[in-house]
Structures are given as structure tokens and as C-alpha cells.
Amino acid sequence: MRIAVLISGSGSNLQALLDEQGAGRLPGSVVEVLSNRADARGLQRAADAGVATTVFDHRAYDTREAFDAAVANHLQRLGIDLVVLAGFMRILTPTLIAPFAGRILNIHPSLLPDFRGLHTHERALDAGVQEHGCTVHFVTPELDAGPPICQGVVPVHTDDTPEALARRVQAQEHRIYPLAVRWYTSGRLTLADDGPWLDGRRLDAPVRVHAEDDVDAW
Ligand code: GRF
Image (cartoon, rainbow, N blue to C red; front, top):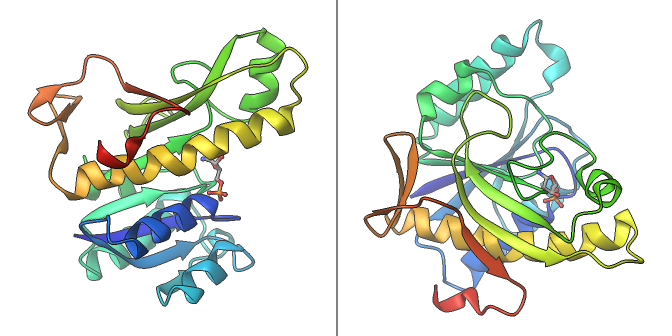
């Protein structure tokens, strides 16, 4: 399977995927890293791993749809099977989603459906929740509302800061994203009838992963 990873920034989740691939645990390969920002640090991570990179600067396009059409055409020309959004700070339109329906994954830094949108760690602390985390989900046109596949769950401590909580959540992102991509590329995970299916069974709720779980064998 040919994987494209779309980024806008640091690319630590991209790195986790590249590491998974480097360890021989990904039945598929990241063949393209695309960024809407030329200064995204993740582009260097891709180059260091010998993966092709492309920058599509969204400011060069008049509309969201025009940008999405350019990206979709590019990914289709490359024969991409799976699109992995990893900190890609763009709201996607159906122009990009439709050609890859059921083949786009995103990771969001909250336990969806809680805290869609931005500043999730601050909002989780303000809300006084005891658990927080991250969610890998299939992408549908409604922002952060696609069917959830798995969640990394972390405790919230009484003296937490947004930064400390973010670090704890990101450590789980780097475990559950490679896991979900591995599931997808090995044919164990699909989207059908608006829901995620894993190993032939519909997931009524996302798979919950805790820090102490050993996900390598999952
Ligand atoms: C992550 O926190 C992810 O949940 C969100 O964007 C951030 C990307 O971080 N969608 P990185 O670029 O992978 O380090």
C-alpha cells in the first residue's frame, strides 16, 4: 500500500510512522509527504528518511476547493492508497475527501466526541475531566466527526499544565497512529456502512489503549 502523509508542522506523528516502517512493522510504505507550509519541520524528517516531499502552499489558491483539487490530483497521480493526516492544519472539503472516501485517517488530540477543534488540552483542563487523550478516526466532511477507530487514554493530574498534558497525550499519539495505520494497511481495518470494521467486526466504540498496554502485538 502506498501511503501519503499530510503535515503542516513538526511531524512527530510522521516520525512515528517512519519509525514503524523502519522497524519493518508497516505492510505498506510512506511514499509521499505533503505539506501546505514550506517551513514544516516534518519535511526534513521525510527527507532524512528518503521519502519524497511536496509543498502545496494554500495561499497560492483562490479557494479551499481549488487547493483541495490540486492536492487530490497530485495524490491520485501518485497512486496513493491511504492518506494519513498528521497535524495537517487545513479543513478538508469534499473535493479532497470524496476521491479518497474511507481511505483518509486523522489523529485528533482529544477523546472524541469531546473537544473537537483547537486548544483541546487547555479545554480539557478547564472542563476538569479526569481522562483525556487522542483519537484516530476516519475522515468525513464534518470536522473531527468521522468514525473513531482507536483512542489513547491518559489520566489528567491535579497539577497538570496544558504542556504536560500535551506531552502525555502525544506519547500515546505516537503509539496509536502507527497501530491504526498498521491495521489499515494489513487489511484488518475498513470503513463500511459509515462505521469502522476491525477484523471483520464492526466497532461499536473505539478501541481504547492505555499507556501500560503493549500494542506491538495488537
Ligand atoms: C498532534 O497533536 C495531532 O493530534 C494534531 O496535530 C498534532 C500534530 O503534531 N492533529 P505533529 O506534527 O505530528 O508533531
